[in-house]
Length: 90
Image 1: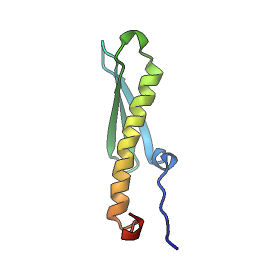
Image 2: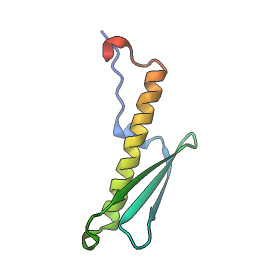
Image 3: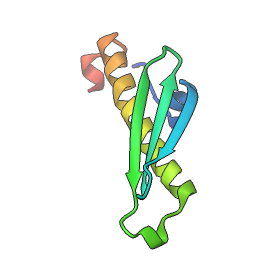
């Protein structure tokens, strides 16, 4: 029997202590900066092709999701580096 390690989106959200959003003036670009518990900042972004269809809330959500995806990669790397996965689980 092997110990399976899972990393969920809720696990990643629990690492976030602060969210900061900024919309680039005169554009549809939204930037999300997530400060993690250890002080590291991860940045995500979004852009809408058609300015007439720009929705600020959707832009924020897409930028947040982009940043969380980056946290997921970082956490996966950390967990692998700490030996939380063995060769049989790959």
